[in-house]
Image (cartoon, rainbow, N blue to C red; front, side, top):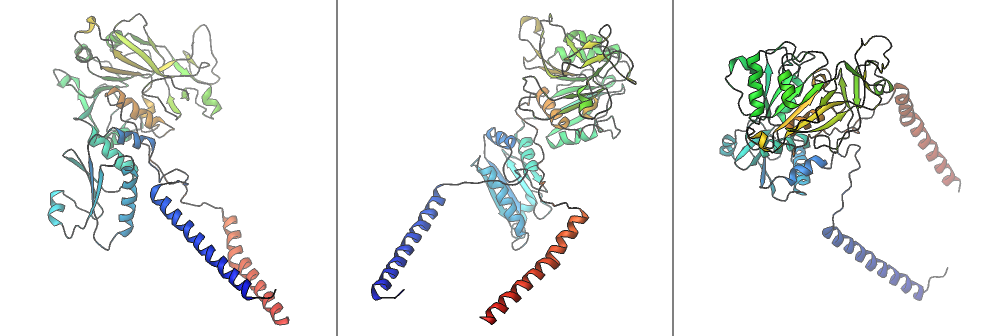
Length: 457
């Protein structure tokens, strides 16, 4: 093609128009990026996005939150960026969260005032109270905000002296691991020895966790008086014919327990060989289990019956077994089959909530918000079974509800599951062979061929 003055001018004009249009598009994109924001989290566990529970908690915080971290200049630059990015996710939903990064070497008085001891330590302040965080992540920050938001002390008193599960015990049947999780949420646990107290104090809730020996009559009276006063109660009972002296409490609540142990065929489908394990996947509509999407596992559960003629309590089940389950009154050995003459067919309630009705008969109740939870199993929160499926989150929800803190939701830990690549030895050898031998050899052959062709041309 012959290059003329005319064609050269046309080409120059095309280049000018292209530059103008390209610059205009870039300018428009820059303007749009300042006006609109779009974010996408492609990580497997969405760890760069706040969980729904964190967002819901932020909606409940009325006042401003101040976050201060102490990082020296020139050090821990990655920590600065990480903290800023994490806090910005919270600021997206609550604008009055402020972040201040301070050099502790320049502000020693503030370091002493806030009792900061380590570089990178984070102090969260809310309405005159503060808490320190050593390792900042969504779970720890949200739990800290949750504790600061709670009004007043939250204490659970565990009745002891009758072989109950110990909240601080490390045995398989005890609750040390669950109690540790509760402390993170701002709920403390203490032992209550009924023979050492004239009356039960007003606390978030009293817990009776699977007693093994009989209560004395005076101890039962203390519990009855506490419930009549309007106290919150969590009662966990395992299979067995004895209530260990707590029959008056059962009569007061209008409940009784089925004889025998629940057998759930669903467990066999999930390769659980023990016939005494009950698995719950569907939940009735209740605040405790609303939007709960985890499987919960209950070893050796007992069914609960509520007397529908009882006019003092409003009862609502929140845990029920499948319809084909039953309460086995025989021995759980060998082949276990349903016997219509002796066993009780499901669905069976293993979790029941009770709230005091507001009527003239209950003038002794101090509040109509009194809440009681009765569970037909205490093993599911024990050290042995707490880590199974959704048992931990369910336990948090139960404690929050019975303590009148049902606005607080259990915040599950978000783990980065896509940060490691696990490969077999054979696959590692293949990858090494490809990158160390095959790929370099291919590039060498291709380069030699191109060099030879060019030389021969």
